[in-house]
Image (tube, rainbow, N blue to C red; front, side):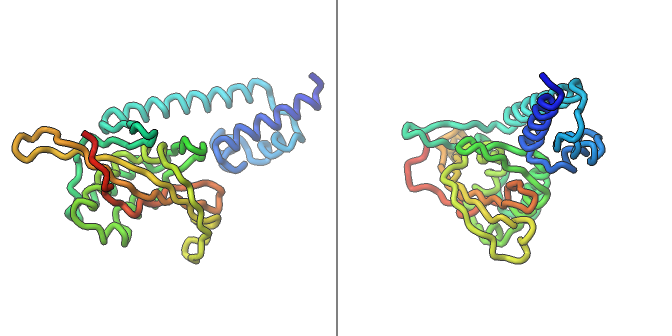
Length: 250
């Protein structure tokens, strides 16, 4: 392989690696501790990067993803959450514990703190392979938005406990719709508009006398995602939570 061809191959591999992480050149360079100018020269093909370095960068990213997935699996086990599929093919996030009652302000403060554990994480929507990131604005919006404050009774309790299934809800999201941003306050954080998706989850109902599991109630919701100036999509909130009229899971 000639030098020019090798540089061209390296340039494409480096760009693909960066774009797979949805990072700009500055962010990508900082993540590896490499000067921005050097990274720009490599990606533009002006300089040849050491072959071993490209392999090490790829190895580092694979190992980080491996440990990230392992951490997610462990979190999923501790949360007692799983995904099931109905006979018609639709999927539901089964949340097997009622951790929150959703009645008091103090409890929503606890939910907000709980959700902060996910800040910095990202998950893939399986239907379209889009990556959805979780930023620091999500916990506050989920717990304190006007739409949340308007919730009462079982629906408030449903949203409170949906917080336990955030990764899985992103995973099963379907029926994407798009709307341009029209609000000045979101000119940066939602510069490229808003996306909405259908999600469904189920919560257990226990018999008052025996305390044993009686059934699951199924809820539908709309997952709201903002498309920010940096080109990434960020989870923003879950809206329009409703109990479905269909029979609960037995």
